[in-house]
Image 1: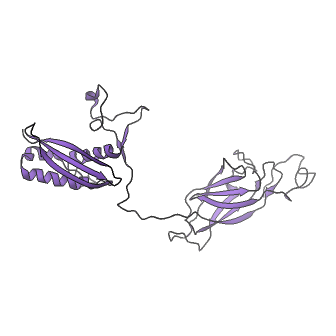
Image 2: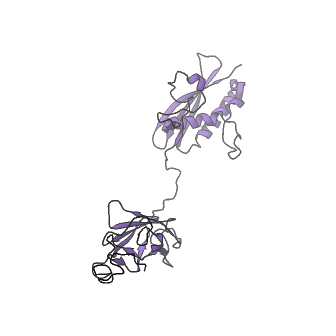
Image 3: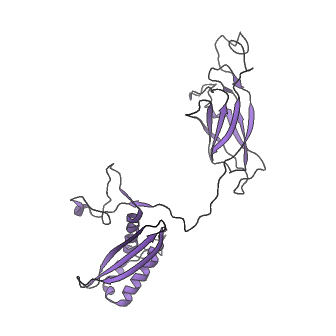
Length: 291
């Protein structure tokens, strides 16, 4: 155990200055508990000496701690307790008598056990120290939930001027560029609006345009003037429904072709979607069917 440099020489009034030494009232470890997958909290009987300056008695020195797995213990996930290393020591803001031992990786979950060894820790007044001591601590319990396609997850996408509400008077000049929010960062869209963006992207992207996604895209431009025939319209409708259904949050989709009576040669696809979170939307996508 390393001793700090104390007043009164090497301790003329006892093993430490003014006597007492490491006897009664010495700082001790009261509790060792894992509070997160990679954090173990140590509760002491008194406030430890912690400066962050890495002087000899400083409790922030990682060499004063070690965490080793208990051989033979297995976690809830069926894996043996994995080795970990101490990365840093952090103060606990609401408890002056506690320190957090932050590890370089998550521990194997409960009931895997770890041995926490502490040595050379001094009280804040440098009048007492902890002799080398070890305590076992079970890791945190991790509830493992298998993924399911029915689980709805929130999604975000880059804001697109073609699909959002355009308020900029110069929008025509910047159409196609990314929008900027009030903070100066790229604007983001969520929910139904973000889903619309992805639907339009699927419709405008030619099939096979992405080498890593060979089945992605509808390629509306490839249909061209062929949409004047019933067979081409039927093919476009079925392809659009199949593509939209691949979006993770879509629970139901229906696409219906509508011939615009006010605009000869204009076909509208009425797209109705419902998400797994219960939100619904219906919007039109127009296509020219004649030259």
